[in-house]
Amino acid sequence: MSQSDQGGLRTLQKKWTTFLKARMICHSPENNLIFNVVNDVFILKLREPVIYGVFTSHLNNVGMSAVCSYSLSTVEDVFTKGKYMQSATVEQAHTKWVQFNGEIPKPRPGACINNEAKAMNYTSSLNLPDKTLQFVKDHPLMDDSVAPIGKRPKLVHQNVTYTQIVVDQVTALDGNTYDVMFISTDKGMLHKAVSHDMDMRIIEEIVLFPDHQAIQTLLLSDKQAKRYIYAGSSTEVVQTPVAFCEKLASCAECILTRDPYCAWHKGKNSCVNILAESNTDRLLIQSLNGDSSHCPDSADKGIRESMRYKVKAGSTVELKCSYKSNLASVFWTFNDETLKINPPKYLLQSTLIIFNVTEWDAGTYRCCSQEAVKDKLISQVVMKHDLEIERTPLPLTSTTQSTTQREEPIEITRIYTAPKKTTKTSTTQAVTQLVDVTQLNNKVTPTISTMEVFSSVADVGVGKALYLSNTNDCSLLIILVIVFFFLFFLLLTYNCYKGFLPATCLKYRDALLHSKKKTPLNLKDCEQGVKETLVEKVCPENQCGGAQKAPHDTGYETEPDCGNGNITHKEDETTTETEKDQPFDVKCEIKYADSDGD
Image (cartoon, rainbow, N blue to C red; front, side, top):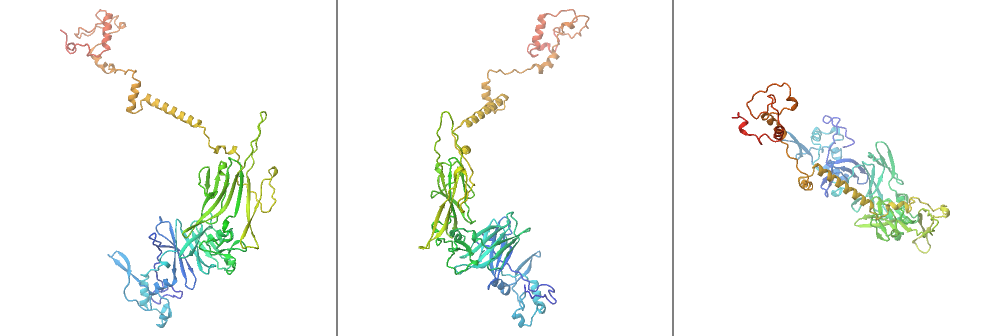
């Protein structure tokens, strides 16, 4: 759009007459992914302005962000020389935008009032003809798209969502100008990326908001000497410098950051910001390809300090390591060999912890940082730790009195390397000062201003680390096994008794219990009703005496008679009881069951 756009006289009154839209392509050929959501745009104002855009994908499961740059001249060519699009109805239901191949009116629709329009006596958008204005109203889209510089994104990062971007330019010591991008994330982080040899890489990651607030605003100050980045969230604003050169303690560390703002000053023996120094200073060392061979401390590059430990066997030692680069990885060496992290050695982030120290653990430990520079890995030693086992003499034992041994704290000695210049050679010599921390009566009195006492290592004696030592006593394991088998046998016995075992196991159960006889089926109850209908009960003796009612004559000779004066004999009672215990059809004659006797 044009700033001098005043709208049309009759058509597009109080509306933009230069409003046109074109697609900006941000496509990653490696992933075949199109980033079509623009989060922020920054225009780097140069002789040839460059537009930087932060893009994400509309696919939420991708989780990738990209940065693409566009030349302003390419954007202008699309609007001034590109073709237009028009809407077309497909199958009377769907509207589709297709390329317009008809005649384009003059002056060019959507263009600013340039020399060509002024030559046609059009000095303002109010003077434009209705044909041109109506064409802009019907054709607001351009058919041509804007391609990024290099036909690919400058940077693609995974598992992050970029929100804002600002770009700065800095001239390095090699005379080249580099674009430095500061990109914020939705987690309160700030990524610093540098373009070098057609390759954009992230050289630093800064935590601006520890509570992971999304950065909504990003601003770069215009001061030449000290430049700052201002980041704002929904609740606060943070100011941060563009570089943290003073925090890089060694020349190798200063070079490996590959930060165009930073250089190593041999006179000051520190890493400085080149914006505050003179670029013509010959004492400055800078290499954006990560070559640290020109550093004066290349023989021992990276080592900021050394630690010496004197501990007792069985104690615990904590070896710390701190490095500045977030792109580097840490590994440890032991006596110039790569250390394998196995128990009782554990690695907690960059700190090495050794439990139950033995004589085999004594030696020199080095913490090394490793970083990929182009196609090679650059390693440097960050810290060195010397571990020594204290040899305590055996106490003299007595038969009458026992000797009590007091636990002593771990002795820690820190070695500082202070550079000292000589008049004969330009190289730097390291003068080592050894400060012993142990004093009489276990009291520490500082005698030198550079001495420090560290108590980060816990006072652990042999007795306190016995739980970490290996033992061959298996009594506890044996007890647990016995208890397990006892409970298993008890459970098996209960299930065998209840008959809850499978059919295969029940066979063995029957074999073990073969002496137990099966209970015969009791058919007495099921046949009692039939017996009572065929055989009458014998009257008890207490019911046969006295005046009894004459029984009904049924005509059966086998029926006992209790009312005719006959006395029942014991043989008959025995026979009757025996018959009751047997089924009715055992001794019963069929001919008397359903018919009268002869």
